[in-house]
Image (cartoon, chains in turn green, purple):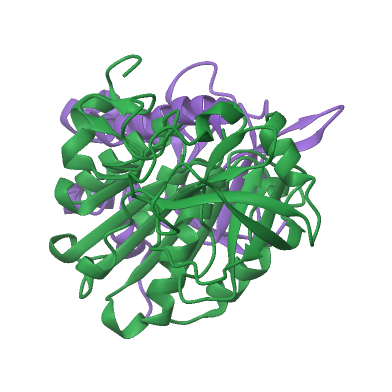
Length: 299
Length: 152
């Protein structure tokens, strides 16, 4: 699921960022992609009980929707998707769930603190290549974070796309990310936003059920529709299958994969997924390219 | 011109491709119902005596528990089918069904559907094929829900 949900599970030791391959290039901030740039934390916002968005000064940083950074909290390093607006040149955001010692350290940062940033890395969502298409965005849990820059891009260039659907599924009401933003998007007349919970109590009057249960509400021209999915792998499999049933082309369905990324430049092999290195060839991959790998155990 | 009950049934996705005779034979055992928001349509343990076609609104399937209050298992809405427990004995509802918004339904007498299925096996096959499709979709959703709960 992007890089967010399990950041803590894949906490990387500090040695991973040692300068072992001098002058190799790859990151945008200098010749050495292993060397983090020290950035100032501008703001830390609590999104849910265990998830925080950390804004750091952009200072010339540019990225594409779907890319990720390696964040170094001086106790280790984790891959985290960038969740801010790619057209915002003042700060970049990372939405992080506090689940391991590195992500806990990141989530305890305060404005004015420093954090190491390497990136941006990875393949972006090919959203510009799909101008003229209907757009289906499907997010599960923290998977909404890497899709948020894509949403910003689509909404900023709304006239270039056909119908736009955002389907968001999460566990419970208290796990909903970016509430005020979702409410704003829902209030627009040019996008359909549907939210569902896996579990709810009597105070919730919205949808309850898995995110696939929202797919019948997607009314697109399957010949000209493209889908962008991020969430737990099993959810992405089910969603992709439902979208194929709807008539979408497997080449136009894109998933953001999560694996144990360490070097972030396709050298160490920790994130290998079949023939792909998720950090370099992904994290965004076409469903047609990886469908056969998704049901292979322990790939 | 108002739409007849038979036409309303035919417009619902469950009956959309069924023959005129099938729909007519069902319509004589059907009626329109409206529930205000927060009203129960049926309660767990009551006789499962109807198939409901939702024509407007949203319905939650839920359980009441001593420690956690009401837990919503699933929501279903316009163009969905509510209630399949009438298909097999003991013909009792397994969950509460509550209207979350103003909800309009078409209620079809389940005993009459079963009787018609017994008498006309071809009709029975068409009905069961549709119902199995719904059951399959809901089963897959529950499986995914279980997996997701662990991962999300």
